[in-house]
Image (cartoon, rainbow, N blue to C red):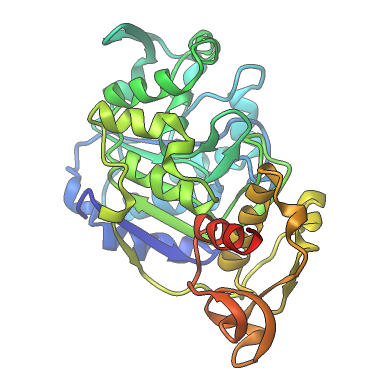
Length: 364
């Protein structure tokens, strides 16, 4: 897998999705049998992944099983929940104790870890010692919105590798600069994004959106720039992405990315109950057998329009879903299946960023 490549696989069954994804990413080619491999999920709070807040334990379990099957046994699952919550409680509530028992993989609470001080330009960072010492770091964030930085994904998930006192200081420094600086020191070798269920507005969950995909990439900056578009933002809306690029961490130009989709989206599989906020946005939609990947993009796009104060100007409802294939409809269609609408945006699935731009042009 090259650094400019982004792999995407659609669905919501991680045990079936992870092996072909990691095969396509060429993970085994990067590893040596004696490597200590660190796995960093997002367990910001002690909430199940269905809340949109935390990394699906089935996904992490599938990654661990894949590595174990291929003879890699020096594995660590490392995390530090946000200030105010217990990592050990999160390991239990989020299903990670079961992974640890099943695969004999230790759970490392980084709140108990020592730390090292590292100077980056004009900033001294305190970073937990164990993440710095692993031979290969697999970052497994959740794709979700954030109340302060708009996006939390690859780069921001590394904030779980610093002491609680440093987390507080990151906030006092405005988050963006220290997040970018942290990524220059704490190198991620592979990012696997849990984009099965994320959150519409808040890093602690509560407004889950089902997008039914897992994403893999070696360049965390490129992954974040791509992820930003998936939920309706541009990279310039999230300053730490461009700052990390300027610091040499990676490339933020998505036009230079080779996006490889390993399969197509489907509307089959488990669907999760929508929150009130998602249901309020759904009032603008006429949905018929829509894939969660496509529908999730539309919901994120409508939320971005709401944030900009433009959603109330959308007077016509938006059609989406496989049930509209081949139909001629007078109205607005989103996605390939609704291309029979008089006004439509193609894509299978389209990015939320593209939907936002499309609807904003219609509202002018």
